[in-house]
Amino acid sequence: MIEPLADLSTEQSDPRYSEIDRLPTEQVARLMNAADAKVPAAVAVAIPEISAAIDAIVARMKQGGRLFYVGAGTSGRLAVLDASECPPTFGTDPELVQGIIAGGVPALTRSVEGAEDDDAAGAAAIAGKEVGPLDSVVGVSASGRAPYVIGAVGEAARRGALTAGLSCNRDSALSAASEHRIEVIVGPEIVTGSTRLKAGTATKLVLNMISTIAMVRLGRTYGNSMIEVSAANSKLVDRAARMVGDITGAGLDTAHATLEAAGWQVKAAVLMIEHDLAADDARALLRANGDQLEAARQAASGGVVGA
Image: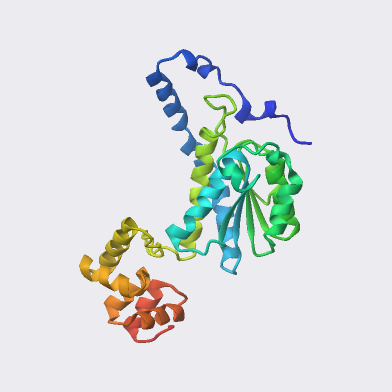
């Protein structure tokens, strides 16, 4: 039995905001800002659980597993957003991190009535992705009670996948269905029940942590540089060139020209400049060293490829 909405902290009405429709704009903005300022502290309380989930997810991804986020409404849109940012930021295959939203693509821009309440559809979405034991599924629901999300997490668990539940209420049905419980308690919203506000902000912060730290652990950064960035526009071309220059000490013109010769692959360009390699030789050196730039640099310096 799913708990009534009225019992959820995210559905409570906060009397401090009961007259916002009569207040000056600046005062309402300050109230919202003060409420939002409490979100990072709520996230901080959940960091041990977030970290444990990330480490478990990464362990499976290192074995070839995928990461799925599943959500409905605002939670689903945030899930899809975070997943869609991984390929351009970290150079991942679009299949590696995927977002699933109740109602499908149309739900990204408008409400799809009843989609959130269809637990069978959630389970079917997981089955359709052929989720298996190496995969991880993170259910995202501010209330922690969305049937679509709970159905998806339940199916993922049945298939042996790692499961995590991200919600903004204590002891939710989603938490009960998940191996890893992430509960970020942000309390009532300034507009009662509008969980796109504090709950949405908390959700975005946690998803940022999950995807970013997972990619760091998987070697998709070099220090704090987006070494796998996809140079798909002028801004990213400039960023990639500056990255190559910062790592190698080369001027921007040299970095840009080498990047172009390397097919816009930052790691290959670094090796080409530092060790006077052709693009194919730089890529071969990376492959021999697990596609890890530092390992390839050390191997080239020591003269032992694959060391």
